[in-house]
Image (cartoon, rainbow over all chains, first blue to last red; front, side):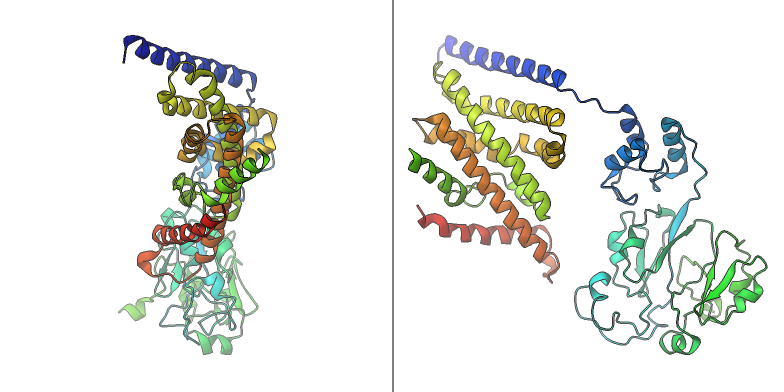
Amino acid sequence: MSVTAIVTAVAVCGILALIIGIVLGLVSNKFEVEVDERVTKVREHLAGSNCGGCGFAGCDACAEAIVNGSAAPNACAPAGAENAKAIGAIMGVSVGDTNPKRAFVKCNGTCDKAVRQSNYYGIMDCVKASTMPGGSNKACTFGCMGMGSCVAACKYDAIHIVNGIALVDQPEKCVACGACVRTCPKHLIELIPVNQTHMVRCSSPLPMKQVKEVCSAGCIGCGACVKQCEHDAVHVENHLAHIDPAKCTNCGKCAAKCPVKVITTGEAPAVSAAEAS
Amino acid sequence: MFSQIIIILISAALVNNVLMSQFLGLCPFLGVSKQVDTAMGMGAAVIFVITIASAVCSCIYLAILVPLNLTYLNTIVFILVIACLVQVVETILKKAMPSLYKALGIYLPLITTNCAVLGVALSNVQNYTDHLVLYSIFNGLGSSAGFAISITLMAGIRERIRTNDIIPSFRGQPIVLVTAGLMAIAFCGFAGVI
C-alpha cells in the first residue's frame, strides 16, 4: 500500500462526505417544513407518556390537536392543572380550574363477600372472559371479575387486583387518564374528584333480594343514606345509591348509617372496623 | 435479460429472503412486528429505501470506486450514502408528500442503520458484474419485497399467538424467536424453486 493509495482513499471519503453534507444542508433548507412553533411548546407541557388518555394517537398528535383548536388546552389530564394553564397561556386562552380526578372502582365484591357461580379456566382477561356465556365467574354479573384488564391498561401502576377485585390502591399515582375506564367491560370504573372520600362501591341495579343472594357487600338500595344526607347529594336510582361529588361535603353521615358499609372509596377494600377488631 | 430479471426478483424475494435465509435486518423484524398495520408500514418504507439505496450505491460504486481502485472502501462509502439518502428522502417526503410521510415517516429513521439495506447494497456489487445498476435495482426491489412479506407474515402470527396460553418461560421474545426459526425452516421450501 503506497502513500498515494491512502491519500486517495482519504480524499475520496472526505470529498464524498463533504458533498453529502452540502446536499443534506441544501435539501433541508429547500424542503424546510414550517412547523407551528406553538406545537413544540405545547408538546413540552404535556405529560409525554403517550398514554392515549386524551383520545389522540399520542402526545404529539394531542399537541397538534390543541394548536388546531380541536382539543381543549386541558385535554391532557396527566399533565395537571399547572401545565394546562401554561398551555392556555401559549394558546392565548384562559383555562378554568380543572378539578384533579382519579379513578374509582365501583365494586366491593371481594373474594369473601361475592358468591362465585363458576370456575373460570381461560385467558385471564376481563374483556375476553366477559364475552363468555354467563358473563362473569361471579354470581353478580355487574361486579368486578378481578382478572386485571384495568391493571394491564394502567401505565401508571395505580390500580391493582386486591383480594379479588380491582382497586385504585395507589391513588396518588393515578392521573385520571381514563385508560382503565375505557377498558373495563363492566363499566365499573369512574373518575371522581381526588378529595372525594365517600362513594358507593357497587354497581348492581338489582333489588335487595337478588343483590343479597350474590354478594354480602352490595348496595341494596335501602335508602338509609338518602335520609341522612343534609346536602341532597345522595339519591337511589334503580336500587342503587349514587353520590353526586358536586354536592357531597364528605361529612360521612351516609357511610355511618349504611347497613352494608358500601359507601367508601377506601384505599383498602372495606374491611369494616367491626370485622377487623 | 428479462428472464434474468424475473429470476433475480423471485430469488431475492423468496429463495434468498433477507430475513429468513440471510438473517439480515432482524432488529425491525422482531421490534416492529407486533401489529400487521405497523409491519406493513415498515415493509413499505423498507421497499422504498432499499430500492433507491441499491440504485444509488451501485451508481457510486461504478462511477467512483471502480475507476479509482477503491472497491475495498465500499462498506464505509455505502454507509455514508445510505444514511444521507434516508435523511434526504425523509426531508423531501415531509415537504412534498405529507400523507406518505405520515404513513412511512416514523419508520424511516429506523431504516438508516438497518443492516438489510447495507447488506443488499453490498451483495449487489459482489454478485453482479454486468448490468450492475439494473440488476441492483431489481435485486433491491425483490429483497425488500421479501422483507415486507416476512415481517407482515410474522406480525400476523404474533397477533394470533398473543392471546394464546404460552408457557411462562416462553412468553415474549422467546416464542417470537422460536416462531422466526420455524418460519425460516418453512422458507427453506423455496430453495427448490430456482
